[in-house]
Length: 317
Image (cartoon, rainbow, N blue to C red; front, side):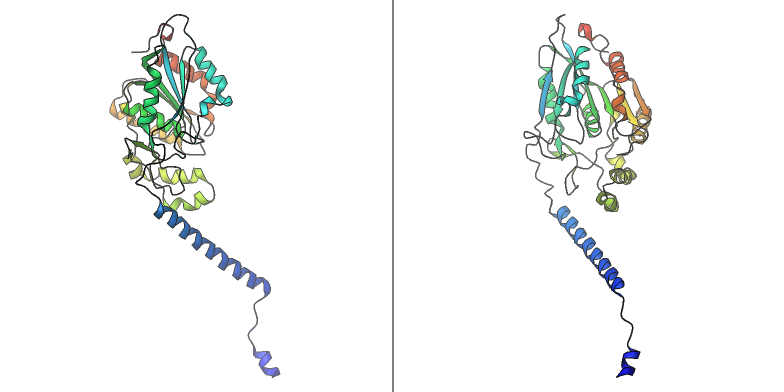
């Protein structure tokens, strides 16, 4: 009996057993997470348009004209934060600066509000454009003098609008993308934007970017998506179709997505197409929000290229 005990295999230590169970638990958690992710993706309804498709929140700001001239319309779009960003107190000072410079200002929220789609998912660009048309029908606004300014995903939307609607005469895009990207839903299998109910071609989410997504490394996710060159080409925004001046402003150390590189790609696309209107790209030191520090220069660009004669109701030809 004593001999049998001496020959018995050694028992694993308590710490080793705990390590084994921890590893098994992590493996099980990863498997469950993968199954859940697969279910979310597989069960997402990609056919039915989001509730309140094509609806937006719009707020028009306009100071009475003392000269009796119609004002240029400056349309302002927020980004992935949702809501109607330009109606908030954070942007009031800049909004008031635009008003004081002779513009009418239209702030548009296109998701994340009670009367809009809940998420950035297949946003109907025709609905955004319809809000612009409604504002331009105001007799105090010059309907032939419309510019759009947006940041981040709003910059993406501004470029899409400008590339499709020729009565938009100038586009300013801050920290923009050069292509239409995936929606902000749990499944991430649809386009962020649509036209007349049909999704615009978009850069899809990649399974290989899932680890970065789980860790909250959005910049890492976007770098992988942008590296998918065939998808970027297929979803590229046709900026060469914009009917007027274009300003791109990016941060050279953008931590959300490579806006500098994508802006460079858009400038190259414009050069290849022989784009004639003024077009500039300012690559600034700093990150994703660096362009918001450059509004005095942006105002000067608009004053020169968009509405130099706004005091008499005229826009640049």
